[in-house]
Length: 246
Ligand code: BTN
Image (cartoon, rainbow, N blue to C red; front, side):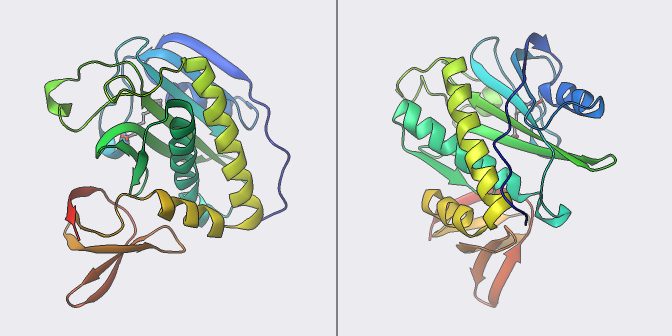
């Protein structure tokens, strides 16, 4: 934890088509790009999702953004930046579209239990750690590839207020700067409380890898806390693959 820094200004690199904004953001960071540098694209040909998956988009339908972060955090706290990003995207989307946006542990952004936005946090240690926070938000899609039907949604499909990509980018960056500053300056408590208030996962019986239990809390280190018949289990990483009312 350290003193709050002044908010980063955002140099924004806008691209029509790119393999992945994550790749470009790391390349720029390695060349010395400033904290807060942003890469946005209209479409990606090899968008990266969590756990090695592909992130699908159709040109112009999504907000696709990567933010270079030169963090003022201990390395062990870097994953909390993905919680900061998830809360920021949820708040920005709720304010801009009026939708009832919820969070699935650790950082999926849902409406009616369907995924509206995803967050990918990648880090590299160069001379100092560099984090790139990738955010993909589905705005105008009216249909998804077969594998995503029932699992993915968009602002348009949910009947949210239409918002332009530039306008939404501004709101997302403003929220992320604010939560990031709080995390770096004050620690995790306020962010954790806000995540819990937005969580869809808490109070549901969930499966994460080989673990199953009632999700009861987000721990101080970002772990999901499960209550099971044989005690309490902390799950540090993974994906909720099934969930039902607790
Ligand atoms: C997830 O799997 O939920 C995370 C998806 C993250 C997608 C975004 S789109 C902008 C940035 N560039 C990428 O290649 N991935 C992230």
